[in-house]
Length: 492
Image (cartoon, rainbow, N blue to C red):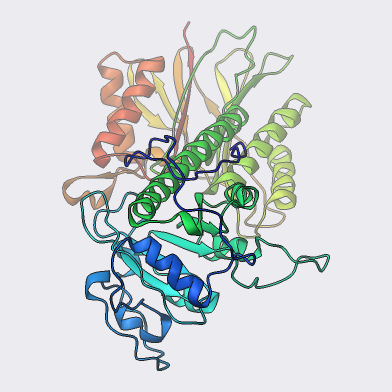
């Protein structure tokens, strides 16, 4: 967000938050220190109230039981130390969006002469704005609960620390408050005419700034509402930006996980579908690839890294790229999978991370293939004139990364002259079905579903789309795990 332009008035005149010019209230302050102390504090508070002064006390950390009361019904501070927790709205009951109940303001100001009188502040619905007062940052942290919507901070408050070079940071107190209250709107209170310091406070993270001797009840009420709405807007914009960046990152990872097949010169037809699971913000570790080597052999692979998130997705990309490079270099079967296990062991972030894998190498004549399974579900083969069935999986080896020195036997399978071969990840078979969604679809359920869809004449892209959609419908909504499906067809 660009740095704000310094201005004499920090608060828009319109109650809805639309910025308009407004004549300044009051004149220059005679307080050269910029603090609210002693008699000057009472004078400022009287100007703020715009009414006759009446006995009135602030909520403080010394009397936390009054912390969430309205100004009109505030309890008197007994002045005694009390370690009882503040009676405030539970943290889980409030989110820092647009408030649905009373607005609550936390004032953090240094007033050794006693708590000043606070005006009656009203929210847009005409309800009183609750006010709590903390005389230092320690008290502020005790009173800073999730039902506080806005913080009014005196920049003249003693700084909690010095900068790294030993010099004083005049905004150190603001930076400290922003660290302990990252989700709250913050208004900075500064000396009259100190526009430069106020603008710097906004640049650092405050929603706006106010001059001490220009306050009145109407102005402060409007400033609080404006700050809360601006904070809400900033948070929404930040989430949108993060969502866009995450989508861009996922798109880049998807291009790595789900590449364009290299099948130039092959008569085989290729189709694939990928559907993210319920956690759409995080791309899973499903990946696949298909390449044709110079001898005419078509190699296909599909795999799944355990877990979800950028680390798992990145590992899936590395495994896919390594598989393509090793395949084009002439490796296959047990030698290929053993090398991939070494890649996984070196690149994984945790020793418990593993990956399942299924590889198929189809002979140049297209009638037979070699199959290797590393803890992965067996592919489905469909041929004209006979029911679709799973390829043998008796010699299924362990998933990559589980057993050092493991072996993965290569099984020879007959495909025939015309066939469809479907490779898939376990997201397709782990969806829930039936009443109460207590059972898994499983491989048997998937085989029965695909058989029916083939009998209906579906093939290629339409078959995969129908299969993924039906599994989702049977599950009663989005699947928990990602689903990747790859289909290779050979016609005579």
